[in-house]
Length: 116
Image 1 (spheres, rainbow, N blue to C red):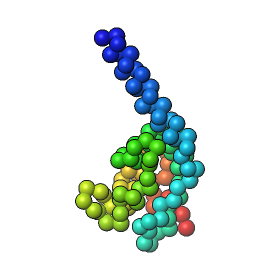
Image 2 (image 1 turned 180 degrees about the vertical axis):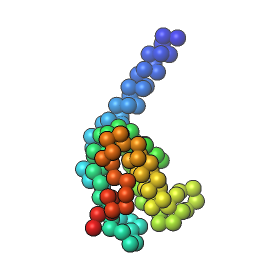
Image 3 (image 1 turned 90 degrees about the vertical axis):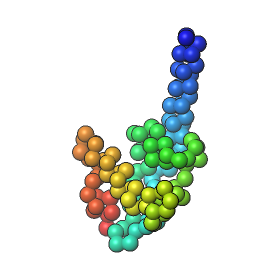
Image 4 (image 1 turned 180 degrees about the horizontal axis):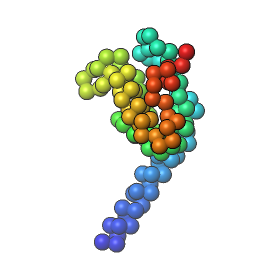
């Protein structure tokens, strides 16, 4: 039982360390501009999000660690197969997370992200 607990501890450290190492290489900013029609593109502090979340798979849920792609690689302008449309997934994922922000500093309104 002790060997199993030690092995589990080593695996957990490796998994969490990989997320921190990958987050260290995250680009400083990211811009979502692939499906904008009437609103300006959204630019956000990608590295700050990566540092805070510490788990790239939270957003890049289908990508292997270190091989994360832009959201538009899977999420297109319209729903395709199992992949939700980019606009819908960004609005849901981002707004859901931002609404849980205890400091109330995370943007949740259209013009907070879509800056003119």
